[in-house]
Image (cartoon, rainbow, N blue to C red; front, side, top):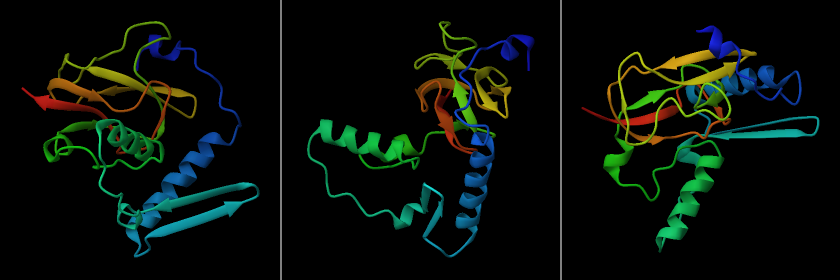
Length: 172
């Protein structure tokens, strides 16, 4: 990690417990994955959380029209579960660079500067593709793949989970 990465100004978490909450959510997601349960619902105070395995999510009726397909894909992305609805099978099989930890993803070194990588550009093994802020530390995320960038999955400033795809690439 460079000194430049530490100088990136970012908004403060809304609550000091945000990081602890993210860690708890990751632990609950791991618990759900290892269990025979399809759904886990937790409520504490005024906050409720429902985690579901992809198999527990009801199938979406066939979609007619590109605008509706985009809306379905966007809605699935907001829920935090990647969806294969409306995508061709080849697109879902693309290699991707995954987040090594949970945190806030930043696509550029500082606000107002260009992103580390762009769609259509090339990425090399070891190249920095973004930053993930976790526990008020900025972690440089380096590519473990080489190829042409097909898609940058999260928007800059979005929460990403460990093992979530960040960048999809077509190998060279």
